[in-house]
Each structure stands twice: as C-alpha cells, then as structure tokens.
Image 1 (cartoon, helix red, strand yellow):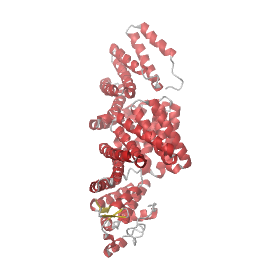
Image 2 (cartoon, helix red, strand yellow):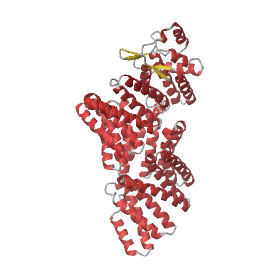
Image 3 (tube, one colour):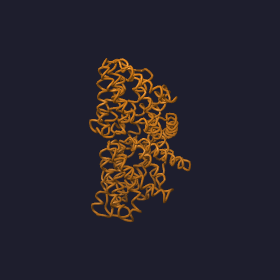
Image 4 (cartoon, helix red, strand yellow):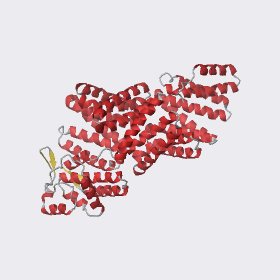
Length: 574
C-alpha cells in the first residue's frame, strides 16, 4: 500500500483525479454496492461516516460472492470513496463477527488486506478511514495498524519535505501508531513510536504550551503505559506523573474539556504506582479516577461507561491488595456487569476487557470464600482468551497465561489437582517464552506461575519438582525485590514461606526454620502498609512455631504462639 501526495489544496492532500475518467465511473457503477455513497460525487467525503448496516451487509455479501473487483475499485476511486470502501467493509467484518459469522468476517478482512497490498491510497482517504474505524476492535487491529503505519510513514516524508511546518501532524500520527502497535502486542515498536511522539510534542509545547500541552499530556500518558508493558516501571511512573500534573492544570481551567483525560491518566497512575509497590497512593489515585468517571457516566453513559468499567476493574484490584475483599468484589462485579452488556452488543470491541474483569472477579470471589463461583469466572476468562490468543498470540498470550495461572489456583482450591497441574504447566511454558524475550516485563509473571506450579507439584507429592520450581521462583523474586523492594518483597516472602514448607516436609527442619525467619522479617516490614499480608504472616509464623518446637526450642515456640494469639486475624481474613 502506498499513499499519493501530489499537492495540497484547501487543507487536503490530493491524488491524481483518475476517478473522473468515464471508464472508472462505469467500473464504480458496475459494482452493486448500493451503500457506498454518492458515486456521482467521487471526491466528496461521506459526512460523519455513520454506520449504514444495510450497505455494510450488501457490500460484504457482494464481496463474499466475488462480485466486487476490490483492488480495481480502490485503485480507481477518489479519496472519499476509498475511505468509504475501507470503512464499510471493516464495519461489515465487525458485524459478521458479532453475529457469530466469524468465517465471513475473516474472508472480508483478508480480501481487504489483499486489495490494500498494491492499492495507491490517497492521504486523506487513509486519514478519514482511520478516524472512522470502530475502536476498540480486536479483529480490526491488524487493519488499523496497517493504515496507521502507512499514514505515519507519509507524515514522516512530509515533515522531511517541509521542515518545521508539519511536526504536529507527525507527532499525532506517531502517537496513534504507538497505540495500534500496542494493540497487536508489538510492544518494543509501540514504545519507539510513542517516544518519538513525546519528543516532538515536548519541543512544540516548550514554544507554545497553550496549544500543545494537551497533546503532550496524552502522549506522555501513552508513554507511561508502553514503558510499563516492557517492564520499565520507574520510567512508566515518571511519565504518567507528568501527564497527570498537566491534566490537573488543564482541568482546573476547563473541567468540561479535560476531566475525562484527567480520569484516564489517574487510572494509569494507579497502575504505575502499584507496579512499584506504592499501593496506598495507587488506591487513592484509582478512587479519584472512579469518582470522576461516575460523574461523567451519569451525564453521558454511552460515552463513559466503558471507561467507568475499566476504572472499577482496577479499583477492585487495588482494594484486594489492601485486604478489603468485600469492596474489591463489589467494584469488580460492577465492572463485569457493564462489560458483559458491552460485549453482548459488540464482542469484537469488548471481549478482551470482559475477560480481564472476569479473571479479576475470580480472584475476589475466592477472597470471600466463594470458590465454585471463582472457578467458573476464571474458566470463562480462559475460554475467551484462548480464542483471542489463537488469532493474535503476540497481543493476547500474556493475558491467556495470566488466566491459566489463576485457573490453576482455582482448580487446586476445589481439589481438581490433575487439571490444576496441567493448566499451570501451560502458563509456565508461555511465560518462559515471553520472559526469554523480555525479562523485565515477564519475569514477575513467570515467578508467580512457578510458585503456583510448585504448590501443584507439592499437592501431587512430587516434592523434588516442587522444590526445583519453588527455588526458581524465589531466585527471581530475590532479584526483583533487590531492585524494587516495595513491589516484590511480599511476593518473595510468600515464595519463601512455600519453600520452608517443602523443606520441612523433606525433613530439613533447620533449613526450613532459617527460611521462615527471612519470610517473617519481610512480612513484618510490609504488614503496616499492606494489611492483606497479615494472614500470610500468620501462616508462616505458625509453621515457625511448629519447627521451633520440633527442634527443641519450646520457649521460642511459645513466644511465637503468644504473639499469634494476641494478634488474631480479623473475621473476614481468609
């Protein structure tokens, strides 16, 4: 696919007016696509590109039946008709997918992709098609990326040809390209494009903050997300904090224009703070984001219920980390309810988000003791994510691995040990591959899955294998905790506690006792700010007391038990 950029007139880049030739008019008229707009006005763009479901149906049906010479149509059409063809067929593919006609959706998108291979597209056609494509939509992500990449490449050429005049356009296209690359799981390239956009917007905002600070804030918010995805968590937090700072100033002057942006950046800030272990601040930022989205959704549900669901899902995670399991469950149930309704109407757009909330729901249902429901929620999440990962492994395999790891835990809790071991091994296999390519991003997930696998091996009485993978998890967590203690010391303590149990079962009581001492020290350093670790502290102290008694240190064992009796768990701690 190449873009034609011959001259600029009235703010539009124009192509050669090939579409005006009589032969082309006959070709366009011969295609029985009645919904493609006024063919007698080939350069006129079709207004706001509102969906025309009848046109979409007829266009895709004719294409499926071989009645549209799509490559010739795209090559011959004017800019408006090119955008129209792309948009109508893309929407038709979404409609097919949403009504469970997936093979038809795949056929339409493949035909469109093939036609785009050699089609010369007008600059404004790509621009307008990108603006009109349904978003989010996981089935359209490759198409959107292809168009975005071509558009950014054209803007790079224009910026080179007209130095200093078109930098803002280039920054905008790079920023969108970064988002589209992230949507298909190409994280390193997404980060590069987003960094380039930020660099340009920084220069522009330095000279003209009133015009370019909003764009700078948006690109910084995206940069924070992409940095977090590749494991550069400290830099992710720094970028997101700057974005939030700018949006706070903008929203103070113009709340109606910038409250939604502020809420989005606060939601991202909550995630970034949690990733570096600042959980109290993370919860506060997420609560503010939810509060803003509640107000926005009350006034305009159609526009903001998607964002509200996302922030509620994150709030559930943050509340769970704080040990507030009942509130975590309530927030997550609200998120699932909203996302179920959205996904029922548009699976192509909202299935990935529904799966994420269902996976979180499983965790919080377990937190209040509803293990059967927790298992059902995680199984549904895995089913969705398997389908998504089959179509786009780069984008969705990490999510599938996360749900498989959680599913292993849920299956183990209801004593389905064989299945638990199988799915956990699958999760570990995926994470090993991912961590080999990007250790900073995926080693934490690998360590968590290895820990779970150790538990499953232990239950299956495969002590040697359990010990091996648990020691590997401990080693990874040691490295992570050395760099970011606040984020990973609780996980290290948890894995040490499991290691101590395995050592004790194998008869190494002295070794197990030493390990419990390390775990206890770590837990005590975090229990004040992270009450959710208190039950885990009780577990390892109970083991420590038993080990002390078995080794003949009855007085020390009694001291530990006295502390446990004087610091009993609250009734809702499970």
